[in-house]
Image 1 (cartoon, rainbow, N blue to C red):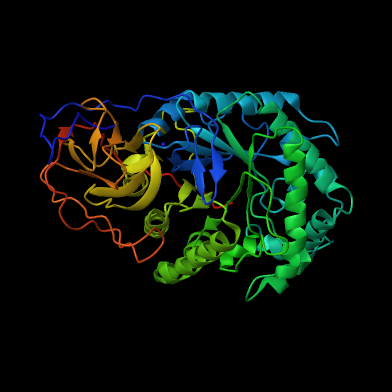
Image 2: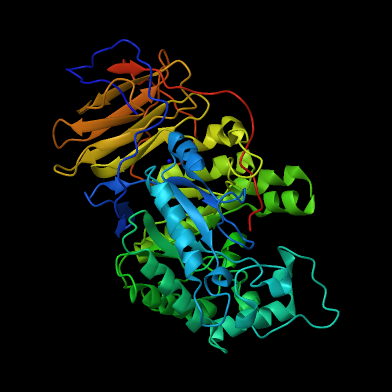
Length: 517
C-alpha cells in the first residue's frame, strides 16, 4: 500500500479536524514501467512502491481458502495500510508439473489473485520462487523432472540454508546454468506462458525471473569480492529468460536478482559484461542481515544483531554501485524477516534513496481458521505502515518519516501535466488526526481523505509536511537523494498546518513474520 482539505493561501489555512476515511479509495491500476532509475505510471508520475511478499510454496498452490494465499479481505487490509504492491510467489514446479506441459488451471488461479489485488489498487510482481532448487533436496522451485542430479548415498542434508553447500545440489545448479538438459529452455517456456496470461491484466507489474539464484560449484569464486566470471554466465541466463517473457508479452517489466551471495555482501557484476540494454528491466536485490538470520535460524546470540547496520551499509553501497553503472531502478523484494530492528535499518536506507520495497512476509489473515489479528498493529507494523509519496508529479527529492512520531516531510520538483502528487497518510500513526502543510503548492483532496493530493503552484520545488496536531513536525534532510545519512528521527519545525483530519487507527498486537526463504 488520504489527505486533507483545500487550500493554502499564503502561509496556510487551518481547518477543523475531520474524520478520515478508514481506507483509501482504490484507483484503477495502470502499467508501471521503468524510466532510468525510477518507476513511473502511465501519466509519467514517479511511483514509490511499499508492499509485502505472499509466497505459497507447496501444492496445491494458490488455492482459495488455503490459509496462505491473499484474498479480497487481505487486499482490503493491505490497501488500507497504504501498501500498493505484493510480490506473489509462483513456481516453475506449479507452472509446468509435467515436462513441456503448462498447467493452465494454475495460470488461471494466478490471474485471479492478480485481478483481486488490482481491484484494491495493488500492483503484483510475480516472483518465480525457489529455495534449495527442488523438492529433491527438500526445497522447492524446479520440477524434479527438470534436474538430473540427485543426493548421493549418505550425503548429509541439514536443510535451509546450509543445504546449498551440498555437492549434489551444486551439481544440479550447474545443470541449470549450463542448460545441460534444457532446464532454462523449459523455464523460459513456462515464464513465457505466464507472461502471455498476464496480457490484459494491468495489475501484473512484472515477472521476477528467479528468486535467490545460487551459483552452483562456482560459489567459492564469489568470495570475497563477487564473481564476475559466474555473473557473465548468469546474466546470459537472465537475458535468455527475459527474451522468452518478452516474446509472449512485450509490455511486462522483468526483474533481475543478483546471485544470492549478495546476501553475504558480495557485489553483483550484472550489467558490466555486457551492459544491460533491454528496456523495462529492474534490479531486485534482498537486504538481510546475516547475524540476524543466524540468530533466527541457528539460535545464535541475539546480540550479534548489533553488527547489522555495518553489514547493511555494505549491501546498500552495493545497490548504489549497481545503480550507478546500470541506471536500473531498484525494488528490494525481500527484507525484514520479522526482526523490527533490522527492517528499520532497511527502511531508513530505502527512504534516503527513494527506493521501493516488499517486506518478507505476509500470510493470509482471512483463510483457514481466520480472521486472524491485524499484523500491522505491533512494532513491525509501526515501521512498515508509513506516510509516503506513492506517486510524484515531478522529480523526487529528499524525504523523511519518523515512525515514532508520525512526522513526515518531502520535497519534490514539480512537472506540469502529469496529474497530482499523492501522499498516503499512515492509518497507524495519527490516532487523533493529522495536520498537513504544503509550501509551493496546495492540497486538492477532500477533508479526511487518506491520500493527500497536491498540485504545485509553480515550477519551483514543493515541500509537503504531515504530522500529528501540535507536533513540531519534520525537516526535509539537506542534499540530493542518496547522500548523507538519514537518522530516521524527524527534527525541526513544520510550522502550521493548512488542514487537519482524523485517521482511524486500531489497537492490538501481532507482526508479520516468516522464514526468509
